[in-house]
Image 1 (cartoon, helix red, strand yellow):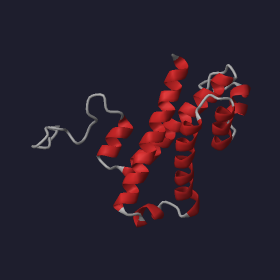
Image 2 (tube, rainbow, N blue to C red):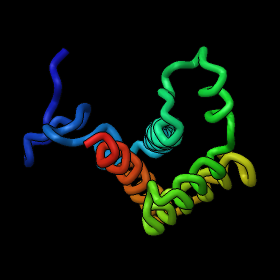
Image 3 (cartoon, rainbow, N blue to C red):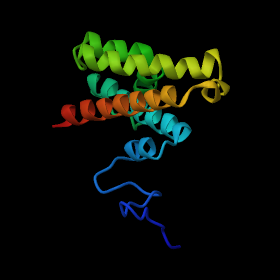
Length: 146
């Protein structure tokens, strides 16, 4: 399959640029729904890894009853736990928590149809917040492992 490029920039619109994360690519191409799903998946995964690590556990060991007990807690409780135990800064907590609230409002309060009522500016703001929260959660995870 031949990939068409933008004549002005030579950038392929169907794949990330070199060193561009998948969430950044989805933001650049304004794929809101895909971005929200992927960003939240990354955030939850990273927070689960950090919380499990606090207890000396590996979040990927799904058959371990201790891991299940820890990871079955609500996302909000896990995020609060990390803040209280100084595993994440207040600023990082605030960014992730703000995105969590907006995401939850879309699913619980108004449903997905609320996205269709948003202005382009509101959608872009939401995408920016998703990328920022996802990037922060990834950086926290990598800081822990280094």
